[in-house]
Amino acid sequence: MASSILLVEDDERLAELVAEALRKAGYEVSLAATGPEGERLMREQPFDVVLLDGHLPGKDGFDVLRDVRPVFHGRIVMLTARDDDIDQVLGLEGGADDYITKPVAPRVLLARLKALLRREVAAASEADDDANLRFGELLIRPAARDVLRGGERVELTTAEYELLLFLAERAGQVVSRDDIMQGLRGLEFDGLDRAIDARVSRLRKKIGDDAQAAERIKTVRGQGYLFARD
Image (cartoon, rainbow, N blue to C red; front, top):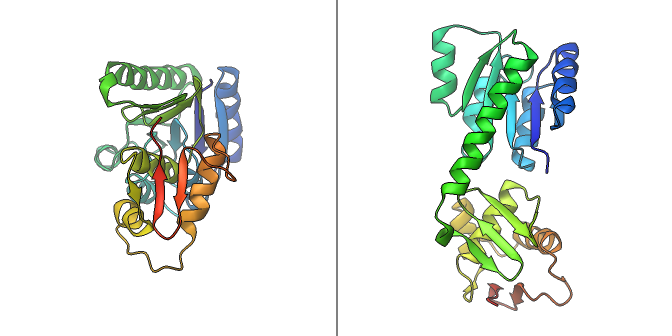
C-alpha cells in the first residue's frame, strides 16, 4: 500500500508541483492550504508523513506542530523557506522528524522522504512481536501504531486507533464509558455524551464487526463495552 502524505502549503503553484512529483513517485497525496485546515486533517486522518510549511495563513506552521504533535503519530517534516538556526531548533524540538529548507530539488525531497519511511519500517520490524495483539484475523501492532485485518491495513483515525488499543489491552473485561473517557481524554463521563458510542460504531464497521450482532466489541447493557477474546 502506498504511503500517504499530507502537504500543507499555501503557495498553490508550488503545492501542485510538489504533489505531482510525489504522486509520480507512487505516494498518495492530500493538500491543505491553511494552518487550520492542515491541523484538522492531521487530527482526522492517519497520514504516514506530513510536509508542513512553517508560514501559513490562519495559523503558523510551528503553532500547528506544537498543538497537533501530542495526538498525531505520523512523521512531520517542516518544509519552509525559513533557514534560521532558531527556526530549525524550534521545529525539531517541537516534535518535527526532519526539517527541509525551500527551495529543495524534487529528487532531494524524495530521497529524504524515502529515508524517513525506511527508518519507520525498520523500527516497526525490530519491535518485539510479543507486544502485538492478535485476535483472529485482527492484528494490532503498537510499535508501528497500525492495525491489520487479514493482512490488509485498516485505515483508522488516531482517535479510533487509541480506542481500539484501549479496549484490546483490556480484552475480556467490561470497560465502562467513564473508564474510556478517563483513559483516553482524562474527562469524566456525564451520561449524555454519545461520542464514544458513535466512535465504537465506526470502529466496528472498519474491523468488520457486525453492529447488529457484534462479536468483537460487545455492548454490555448498562455497563459499557467488552472486547471479546477468541
